[in-house]
Length: 572
Image (cartoon, rainbow, N blue to C red; front, side, top):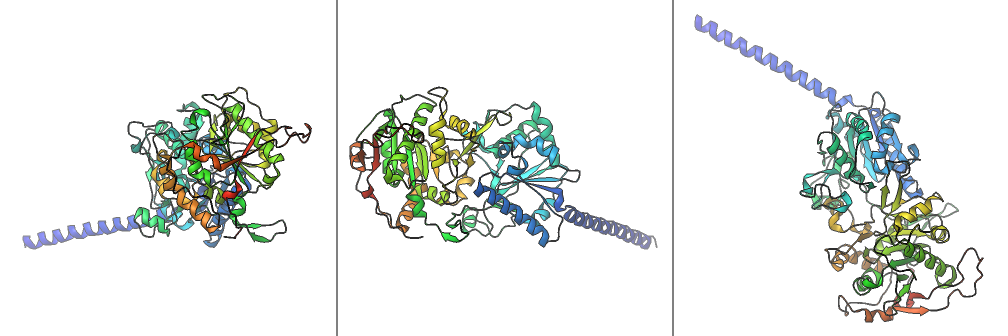
């Protein structure tokens, strides 16, 4: 009898436990279901770091329209999408994120805002996956998500942060989007007025944002979310090869640059634009000095320099064997402003009076230790109009948290100008001192014409090893335009690894032939370069001083032999 009662009691206890478990399960499922459906699209702020340039403006607008289109197709609330070149038109430092932290807090965040998604214009967003992913995250917590990057060694581009162990610090790949809770954003807005920074220069906004969060918000780290923030399109062959993955549910991924070979004419007709036509319209000026004639110039002339159809080498000393043009400006240890402005004047003079160069549309200024992909440069320039002002390269910022701050294109990665922009610099720009920083002075000179720096991440001020692996292995190498500095690297190896194959393929596809260097020694002596140049003297003599501000005497000008190139204008 007692045994039966005990058994019945035990059974009842199990029944109660089972009922409680079932109730808990139902509540848990209901709670999970609520989380999945609790986030609405209007609770996310889409912040697109856009630019004013026509091409970049168009990419940003396409991203915005795609997000709006998806919301309509899914019958969702209208999303809040903001393009920084419109919303913060007067904020030149909007691209650096930190300068607009407080503005976004005051202007864009509403009572129902839960998340801010920071995007580059070349991102693609999948709204369905984004909502599913963020619905499972706690928007009230101080946290942010993205594709994680890290430095293998301390680098100048990141102000040598964490120099003892740089790989410990993770920061997001902006091209894969950054999702941040409004809770964290508001905390940053509160911290910003009293913050100090390691440098007055803005270089990499993603790293600088992550470092600011780390320093000011109790060591808060990026939460890696590479399943949803992808460095490439989920169905990319290269993505699978590099990451050894299958199809991913990407909420945001970075789209690769594509050349703009199809252009609309003034009549609205779409025509194919042969890249070889752009190739023939580029002139490159190399800035050097006597002490680097034999150390650096042979490298230029035996790698990318032998491909450029119009090459000028400017120095403080004339060297007929190397084909250098003497600027008449003594070399300085830093800044080089006076030399650079003189180079721009010499280029403007030659292009004005050397009628064989009347077709030149693009002027590129580089250092003697810049490593360049000519084919990538050509592909990139296909997306810009040569008839509008352009100041293009890798953008840095100076004192952007201050109203007097400004952006400039770094010289080492290469500065691209159109003819009209070159003319403005050549006729209006002067240097405070001979050794003022040339690239920064160029920016201030152009600001008087409201010509702003246009950024492309395909130009690089530093060496390949100065960039995180994911930014170089997860992109199409045909799009990388430049690297800079020979320090502790072999520039021949860098050119061969990154650029040689693509440049040679471009030449082959367009039937452009150059003299082969295969039988020459890898590091040939300067006296073998003599046949690469010829001298044209007296160009531009007897021109009136008041002829549109042009100079009446052009310096001795060196141009590469046209016989080195056999052009066949065949469409791609």
